[in-house]
Image 1: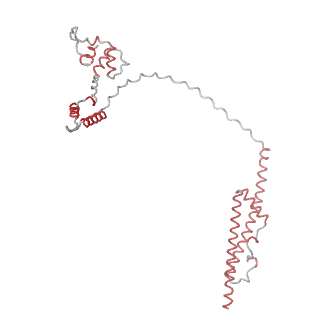
Image 2: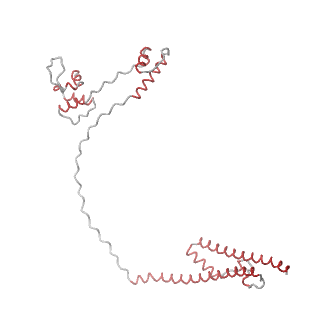
Image 3: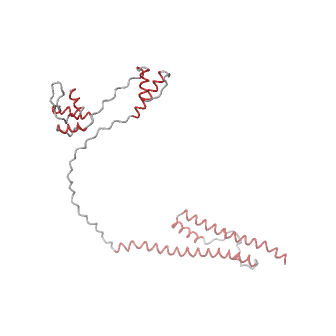
Length: 285
């Protein structure tokens, strides 16, 4: 066994011609069992799962380099002499003081060993053998396409049903047409009242004829005394509630009320200014 290991450590001897051997010489490579060759290649990191012939083992053994034996383990620092520590420091190229105590030299050597172990390259990983070829599965048969189902036939609606469905819609449309006309008339009358008040106040203040101004143009009280018909207001509120909702309808009504109040307040201020200017004009006359 030892002779075979020595022969496998030198692969160039495997391809040489077989010399005449004595009983003390190592056996010829042809006589080395395949199990020993496989074990040696496995130790060198070569995959031999797909090899079966001796020539292939010999070829791979000649190509693969033998793995260097691992270095001897370093002795522990506690058992080393001071002279041995100094020699190893010199061998590693570490500067040290000869007069330093042994504990300091031991720490320097431990640091040098740790740095060398960190910087040492990692051994290369063993090459992996290619995976065996997988058989290609046969193509799965696709089921034949099914014919599309015919769309469900829709029965034509009868004319009597169509007429019955259209009757409520026509009635609702007629009712809304009447409501729209009434609302438009109410809004127009309200706008005319507001415009008459504003125009009359402006004309009376500009022309200086306060007493000759029409009675209906002068707003004698707040807006709450000049109201549109209550039925029309209620109708407008109901239509707005149906169309825009209760909250929006309330906001629209509040906005309209504020607009009328602002217009009336503006007219009152114009009247007050005109009333203040009347005594001055009378004194000048």
